[in-house]
Length: 161
Image (cartoon, rainbow, N blue to C red; front, side, top):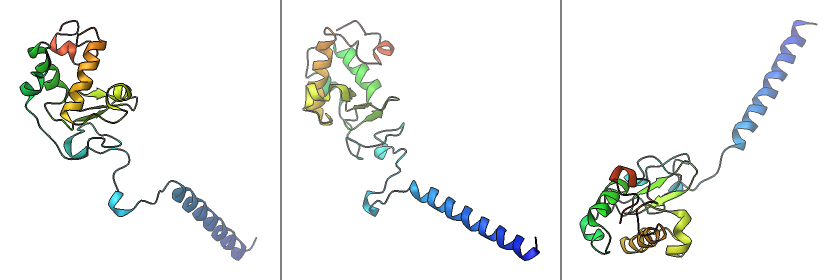
């Protein structure tokens, strides 16, 4: 083959590879309005989701509440409630955690989205009062214990009121 044919074949090969790469790279892009752009892999939701979340069901503004005040709104053991809430949300009513399976825990007591239909009409219970109502439901479903909170072991109250 002549030198000219080799150069022409290499050029055609290079162009085909470039087109294939451009097509492949463009296939994974999504058009997003500038005001809606977020890091699709993870966001801290303004500090509400320190571990990173795909979405921010309780927004991007923190809302720290007095733990004692919220715990006193129900007749459970106050020390256990304060320990659970301190470990779960630190008193941030907008706290969010995305679990490894993709589910979300939200609010003061970190209510899992599995429970949202039963206790908050299917919406994230981000307000303190809705989160309290859900926490009371989950507490009652657990036989009036803290067994359904992952932090109950750290608080030593899994089977206690």
